[in-house]
Image (cartoon, rainbow, N blue to C red; front, side, top):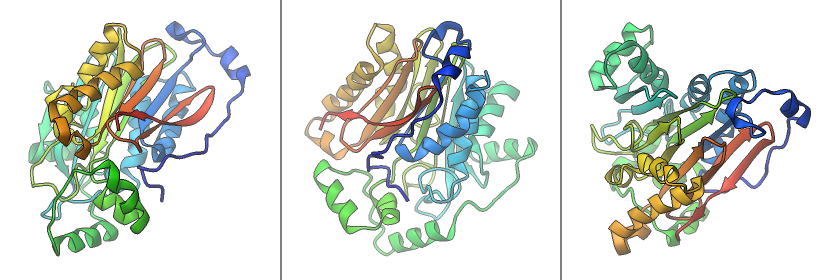
Length: 338
């Protein structure tokens, strides 16, 4: 299983230029529809989203379909089914969506539901609210036909019970110890101990030139019960402005929340910065406010603007993201401060 901190060095090429010439792109001209998501293993999620976009589908439908792939993957211990639990052994999920009209929905600390991203969309579409939490979110999901399921896999439970022996909780990592830890531990162990604050954030622009985004996570492994990070918070883990662009984040959510991270990235793009430049500026804000302690934090942003341009940036190395378009499928290793 691929570790998210390792750059996926192969690129997946495909799709002919004939399809590009035949496609009608709305405001996107030659760029065409695009989907991108945090972390290289999520190329499989991008592939699912692409099946919507290549057929003139809506960006919101694409990101929901893509994120559901990762949510249902038991080998991914940072999102959905198989996610590492909190310190009480409960898998609690957070997710949000935002569409081209500025509509948004989110769920916080949702238990026993496989696809929180879809529940978040229904919060947006079928309630007068933006956010539902905990038991209320669960009752709403059940009322919409979702079924309760046990999301704690044997592997994740085993990892949790092993953690209980020391109950050492340290969500921070450093540049210097990443390679050492990766080399001495198996990928599954690394994911639980090093890579315990990841998420899938996905952004898309469709043939009509409209943007949407989605975000989903099981949060930091072995977190305090009730802890919620940036992922389901509109403006922190995700923000979409159809006139400008969209952004999403991954990493230590508390730090993203403190600078309204994804909203900050979009506003920087509004000022004329490229997606990569905007992500870099947001990362620099986190570094500045943390000073010397910034090297113990990992945060990464990706962004997509109205022109179909995209980019990413992170505090530390080893952050990558996947992109799918008519030009093919590629993975990029984001630039970093350290």
